[in-house]
Image (tube, rainbow, N blue to C red; front, side, top):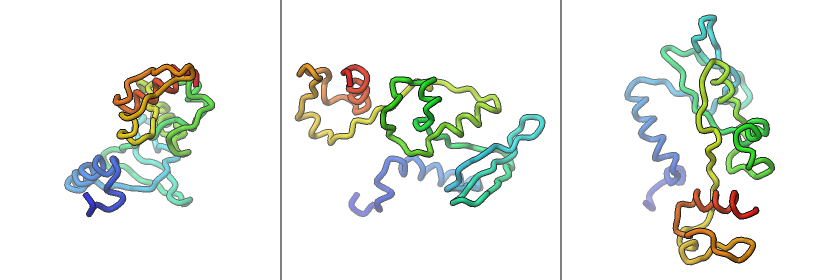
Length: 164
């Protein structure tokens, strides 16, 4: 593992590497570093392309056989947070400002349905070795969870059930 490059150490690399290799083998053209601004839709409702920005420049991509939008979250869209998971209002988001729900709204504008938009990921950043040697206690000094459980479960139990 010490021979890995920095970018290859993240979880996204393990997901994206086989995806990119497969798309290349199939002759799929990929565009990166685009911020989609709009869908280009024909009168019959068929999506035929996108309008986007790449480093401030307008870019238009015409679809030959289809479009795939990788959509971020809506953590930085207060209205969508209020409608879907109001327990997060006023809290720091564990994502980037580009996660404003725009792509989700674009999909909805052409009839796409959403599901599980109230599902949340609450990160609890701590070295697992420290957690299993620790005890998490609430404001009353009571242990409230088994510390060797999944970090997302720790985060939800801490955020949602321990009076902040």
